[in-house]
Image (tube, rainbow, N blue to C red):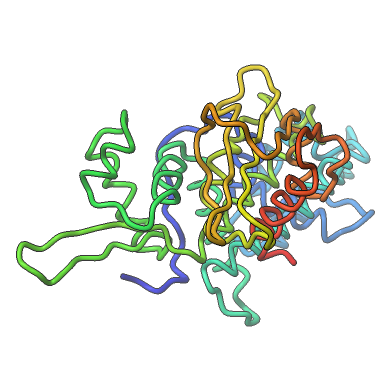
Length: 337
């Protein structure tokens, strides 16, 4: 296995409904957002941006990305190019762009913690590469499926993992697993006994990286014009991945049912259960939960990111529900506190 600071793999699958991740996975877009954000209230032209970054970006490439970001409402032209060519178009971030810049800073912090990147000067380029690969991986539906299935178990043997990832061709599955193992995000353990056996596990320190998907969905809900198509966050999957790191309050077992009141939402209902001091996420059953929390996806992301529980509709034991949600929020945002 390579060093834990090795970047996660670049996936080959197409994005499926995460505009923010798709935007930020692109190195040129990240550079533009980062440098316009650093400019504060000022503005820059394409040549200034291209010359300031550590990547080999041409002015033409930067102008192409700026046009895309302008259509998304992330940047705005503060002045247009003069007809005689004496002055170029200058650009600044919009409110959505400034939020995206802050989001990028949080994503960088989360990724640096998980990958154990050294805190040293001169590491900006290496850190940006790891951030880009992490975003690309999170935008890959196959990687998300693998992470969810491994997140729900301590270890899975190959046949168990293949059965859990129904619909993913075996060859494709292992092509994804290899780079994730090399990156240190997934552990591949092989026994020395005869016959030898292999099993896989999601490395614990990478679990909070799923917060990136929640943060992006939160940004998308705040700026729907910049996020089209709308976000498709698998909230149950995110909670499954982070569940082993949740530390519930003492005071007995509880089952809290989470309902995503969103038309067409995936896994629109799921339970989080406390038993013997641990929390697990599972499919909802016929049993009556201790509490039920219902809200649209935007309210869920606001609750998890901002701690805004007010818009949530809670029935049953509200104290237990809010305690469970606070415990999940603390585990999810462990690397940004």
